[in-house]
Length: 280
Image (cartoon, rainbow, N blue to C red; front, side, top):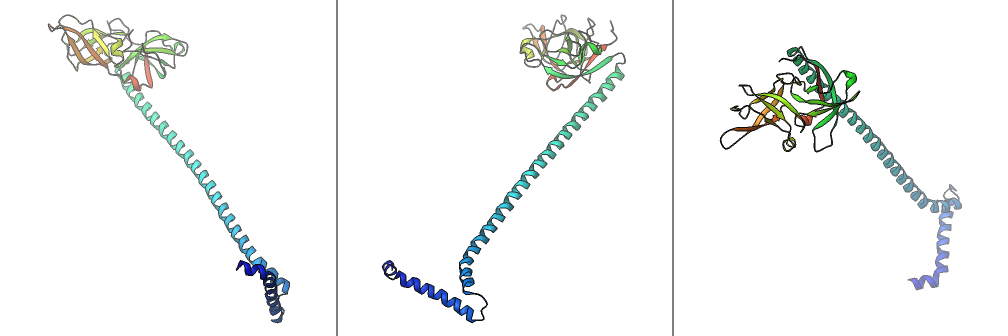
């Protein structure tokens, strides 16, 4: 076939031209609706128009896809912003509800202890030391707080004591800190002792009940309250519960282990007792 076309290429070309001429002449003979040149142009333009039409359609589709993609991105960003606002509102509402609960409990505490002068404060920073249990609060001497002031929760549970003081800040050492000691009464019989911090127990969020009187009887589950001895803390505040009692071989009690009533890990707000009636 290739050899035939090579030898007869001119003849084939002439035949093609003749066919085109015949088409043009035929069209002219049918009423002269289109000219020969127009007919030839139409034959050439037809495939070009199809290609152009396909290209335009493809570009329209691509533009539509890009526009839709941009719209989805914008909608996604809007939904993210709405979700963030909703989450923030929920957090604010939860925080307000928790604070209202604390204030209601504080009101009950004030009604029970009309002699207490209380100052509320936020916990702003926990100590990074492994050798102490302390945190910083957002109020200090300018709010009438003094060194040694007892610190409690809204339920009247002992948190600790102010051990450092600035103009608008203070450091509170907690009940389990190694430098803390609080006079205590234990159990229904009111055995007296001291709750002190100990390094090994501090790491377990516990404290030690020691300096018990000879013959003292204490039991696991006993409540431990402040005795008011020494005047540092008011009497009757809740320290915690006995979770273990260590005895000697002869049955003599050595010490008890106290788990604080206050959940130190969840503290966000505390109350400083600036003044109270000391009962001897």
